[in-house]
Image (cartoon, rainbow over all chains, first blue to last red; front, side, top):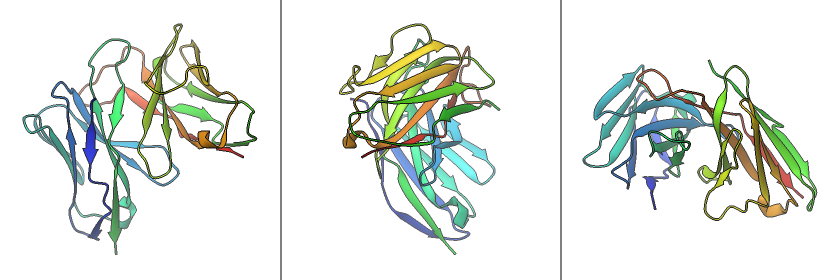
Length: 115
Length: 121
């Protein structure tokens, strides 16, 4: 069974610090990796996605992918209290066919940024 | 950007009744829609994959006769929870894949609705 694992946390960081969120996956055939942020009672919103080894930066967010280690992470620089949410890692396994877009989610990491 | 409208956002129903949830792609055509369920403090679990004009594909453990999915057009998929029970109370979220969209360096082919909070009393 394909699995996506995250540390459920909670992860608590002070305002202005770097928050580091980690995710591992079991299937080496995994294609693409997504980070979603979910506020309580709301639907997930996409923060970043990555499908090549290395780093991808977008504003305060950096996604890192290491396919050899089956590991993907999200760094949030200059963390703000508004970043407090649950962060979900998701993996896309199939690149084509009618099931393209089928995501498998990790259990999420709760992040709290305190002033 | 692409918008997925999910309705209703919140519904309360009595045990034994049926509830229909709609998922619409407003400005794009959705070949495929995915239905997820999320229990409190848990992650999203895929229930089924819905392709326009064909039968839905259900994940293991999801009862297809209980969770009826219809994807009759490229802009609308519906999930009907039949004979709902309190254990069906959950947050249901749809996700739509834009027709012909593929993952590229600047976009994602997937768009989420805002979810439906179902409470069965």
